[in-house]
Image (tube, rainbow, N blue to C red; front, side, top):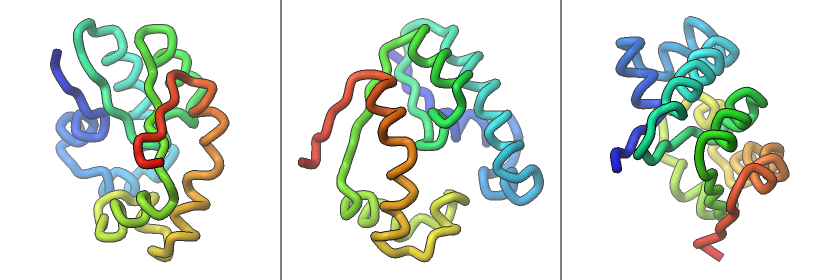
Length: 126
């Protein structure tokens, strides 16, 4: 099986990093690109597709992911999220946080019910 990361695919096709896309097109422009990539990649067979956390905020992307494959949601604690992302300077949504555990936690609160409904749910860090 091939591993495909949607963010890496977007960067490769755009010839620019995610931060630049956010700066020029805003989050809405980036999400449109992400929807197109997810639509395309979910039509492929024999891949493991990794998406960013915001991908499931799009109903279209959620539908493509769940209709064309098996969705696995790996949940982790706010503390682990903070540890894993505190040095992340590349991800625009995370960069907008104040780099505290509470702000990272707020990012993760909104999509959790949607994520839990979208597929298999695992909490490996708990």
